[in-house]
Image (cartoon, helix red, strand yellow):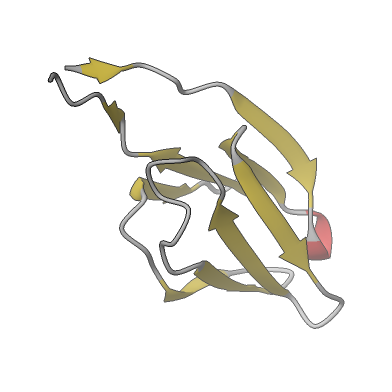
Length: 91
C-alpha cells in the first residue's frame, strides 16, 4: 500500500529558476548553475542525488536518482521534481 505524501516546497535557485521539490529533500545550488537534490526520507535516504545544470536559457539533468518519479522542466523556468510514492510494507 502506498501513501500519497507529495507535500512540496518551492525555492528560487541559480539564474532565477523556481525549483519545486518534495518536502523531504535537501537542495544545494551554486553561482555556476549546479543544483544538487537529495532525498532525506526514510524510504530513500541513501539514494544518489539528482544533479542539474542550469543557465539563463536551459536546464540539463546531469544525473538522476531512483527516488524521483519524474522531473519536469517548463518554459517559464520551473523545475518540478516528483517523488516516487512511499511504500508501506504490510507485515
